[in-house]
Length: 136
Image 1 (cartoon, rainbow, N blue to C red):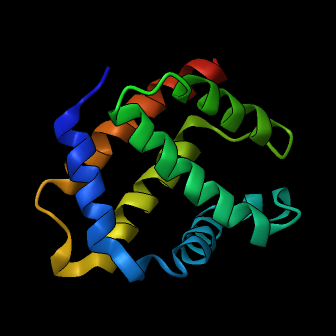
Image 2: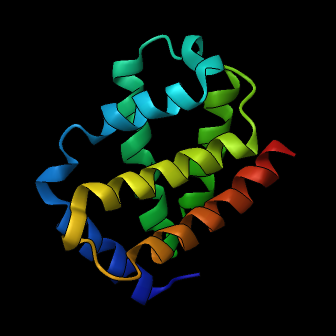
């Protein structure tokens, strides 16, 4: 399902984030691991994983908002790949999506558009439905 209003809001918020995006992947990954230390050893190469996880999460959320056909297979790949590392639970994915949204908003500061968090959260909720189905 495509949502042009959310897609536009997501794109505006990424533009508002601008240069504050630099270094966000490392911050996100570090904060996720602090909150979930049991997964520290799950990532053999955290430097490679952190940027890929961040970029793929944002792409999937944007793709979901714009109704892209490939989002479902991307989510399947998220889940399958992480099964190789550890037994990640739906709440772990939810925590990651929430962390991504909150960190972008904090980094963008006053430039973050009104209702952007809600728009991002709607995409996270859609991805979570797929993640939960994959883990069932």
